[in-house]
Structures are given as structure tokens and as C-alpha cells.
Length: 140
Image (cartoon, rainbow, N blue to C red; front, side, top):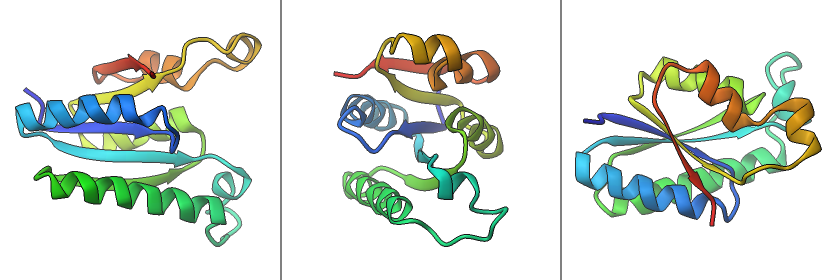
């Protein structure tokens, strides 16, 4: 069924919902999990162009990914982690395509009114631009 699942993480309490579901799927199918967080602050968006060092926020994001990944490996799952940098939707799509994943798992918060209308959401962009199935769960 699934061989490789990309799990998009926000580094927030909302991750608990998608992580619980992804764990179950991985245990049931034997799939590898690719945990991805996209750092999207100023330093992250200009990291390569300006040859910057990782910001404290990016270091914290990387540590979070590694901690979550280690916990899942301790449960017997196969897990890799990746900290991407830039626009969340664009980066999730890029990583998903490069990693040849079978499923993208994300949590959603629902609507944030004006910002969603003006800029769209990461979930909406990923869902409409990627050819890979996307599993969306509403964050608890």
C-alpha cells in the first residue's frame, strides 16, 4: 500500500494529531516515514542566497525533528527527518517529489479568514499542486 509517507510537521501541538495517525499507518503498512518541517522565517527563506548560518529557530526546528524521529525509531519504525527552508507549500511539494513518497500526511486548522483568502493556505496549495495523495486531518 504505502512504502514512504511524508509527514508535514509544524513544530506545534497540532502535530500530535498527524503523528498519531502516521504512526498507525506506518505500523500497519511497514512504510518509512519522512518527517518534514519547513522553516519559513527570514533567515530560512534567504539561507542559500546569502550563505547564512542557521538561526536559533532553525536549530530548534531541527532538534524537534530529530527528537520526534528518535522516539518513532525507538518504536521500531523506519524514520528519516528533513528540515526544509522556504515557502512551506513549495518545499513540501519539492521534497515529496524528490523523495518519491506515496502519501503526504498533514494536519489542518480550518480557516483563518482574511489570510486564507489573500494568500491561500499551505494545505490548499499542496492539495491542488501535487499529484501524490494527501491525507488531511483536522488538528485537535
